[in-house]
View 1 (cartoon, helix red, strand yellow):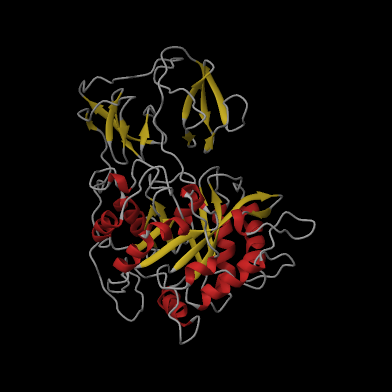
View 2 (spheres, rainbow, N blue to C red):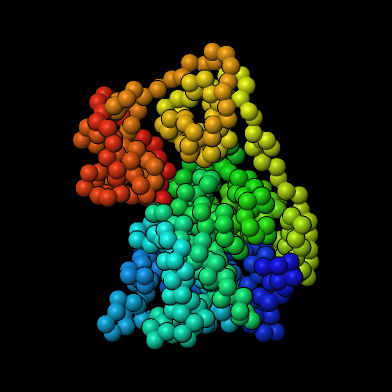
Length: 480
């Protein structure tokens, strides 16, 4: 988009549904976004209602319909839990006219609705740009502004696409987004691209797309991870890292970063907070230049707990402003410039020096920008890690040689040793690059996995034989 298009972006949103309804504004700092479609509230004794049930008031500004959970022969497979079971004849694609009616009813009330691709369970990796472009054509024709004989929601046109990529390698999604953006530009209405990365920065599953494609909203999952909202008040809580990404890395310097939280008990394994703590955190992060509101997983749980209402009452009572970042400007009824917080990361990269940084330890956990010394060199962590030996590649950046004896490295694994590699557990979720020991060998995960036995699943690459005392490795888990 050029600056003129950006300036008109919010105005298109406001005008979209006519004079009687104030439509979704992607540049707002007060949006409440909820996921719908997976009936997660059933885990705590509830039942997720129809989509239209949650559109009757002003609590939620946008809904993410979940999920397109698989890509089979280049075509999307839709899963809406208990909400739809019928399929088009001769296909496995859901046929959900009632959901389509609800989508239009919600849009008539000014809500935005996007279709989410991904989730913790599914197969949706796209590595090849050509495959990404082809899949974009499918999504455009089936869910957005195109034409198909098999449209799950009939003539309802969703407002965009969300990428909840939690496994696999996904470089092809750059071409996917670029193809959709070209189609968006040829229409007279706004469409949106959102993403839901996990809070460890950078998010490995979505990094390629986030750094090379245009996103409107990033719904960061601050739960089920060491950097979740349960760590607020400590250095682990890293909203500043994501705001820094928005202002310095993202192509769209006006991208909005939303605080993603569980909707309440049952919404996640960690990061569950109440209304009081949520408003305390919001009172802090709302001052970030690219803050955009709150995301919750998911609507049924957030409704039952009352957290969505609490978030809406707090955010919607704030001035509805947009923020200018970089050299671009936006046009809205009110424009406010707020200060951008400064990240604790160094502004320049050192080129070696004294080996005064703490020695790397196999048992310690490191956050982005932490420095260690190892074998006469300084290293800086690119993102959270544990038990990854410093080298010239991720998750470590080699700063350079350092002088002096420095601290003595601790916990250095010996070749073939298992003492620093945790035993595989069927209940643990592992991310790409994670190492485990199993049946006397070290295995490396190629992408996110849980419950897939090393040696019998392609996700695991077999390494060297090992021996020694085993311990469980601490890893962060995916949310859904």
